[in-house]
Image (tube, rainbow, N blue to C red; front, top):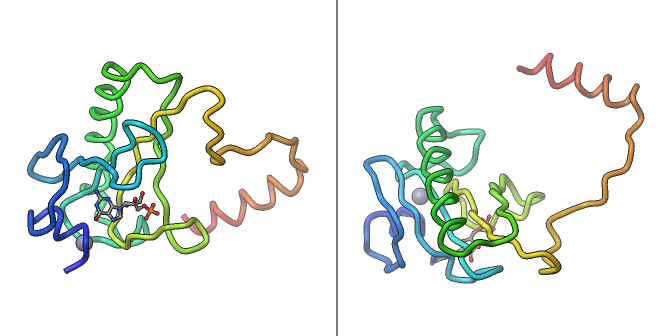
Length: 134
Ligand code: 5GP
Ligand code: ZN
């Protein structure tokens, strides 16, 4: 059983925020900022590539609910919802989860990039490749 399945089962302790039949929200043990928490489907799936659509939808619904609560409780300047898939995206736990990450102006978290105009032809060519794979 993976570590997050053990958290869902209650065999590993966690600070729980919210639970329903399909999902669990709990505090991240290594918070990047105050209020950093995680939302996961209880059903095990490593990444977005394997997860059942209904489980992903349930996790999204709970993430929105928890994000609104974090916003009301902590009044951050903003909130990032983040979900990593694979080593190149820095995924460290192989059970799909959504980070609810409160942000403060100037908090220095390196999640953002500087927007630079892309090459229109390259954007369009890549869009065709993605659409062909849908
Ligand atoms: P990832 O890097 O996979 O997107 O995020 C995994 C997150 O899970 C990390 O932010 C990490 O701090 C958190 N985490 C890892 N192990 C545990 C644990 O045992 N309990 C809790 N509450 N969070 C964990
Ligand atoms: Zn699992």
